[in-house]
Figure 1 (spheres, rainbow, N blue to C red):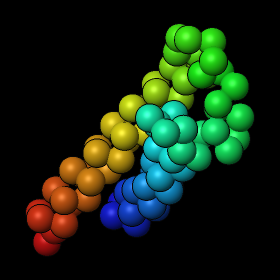
Figure 2: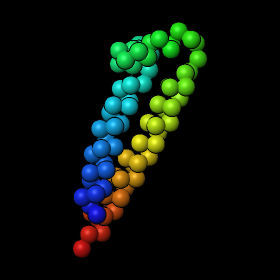
Figure 3: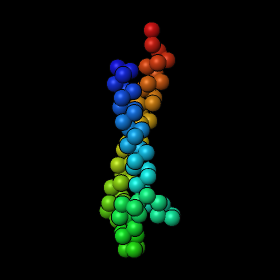
Length: 78
């Protein structure tokens, strides 16, 4: 069970890094490199940016749950 949570945690961690780097920052950041700067001229938050926000929060919840589960498994291991 610990191995499963460890694998899910590693995948979620890698996804979190990629998703956070894709977000539009104040200076543009890496999102401009992948075409994110085009939607910034429209004025509002695009549908893609909102979906990226939702996906990032979802992966963050999975990451947090895996950290808690691993902590509990390791604390109460016989």
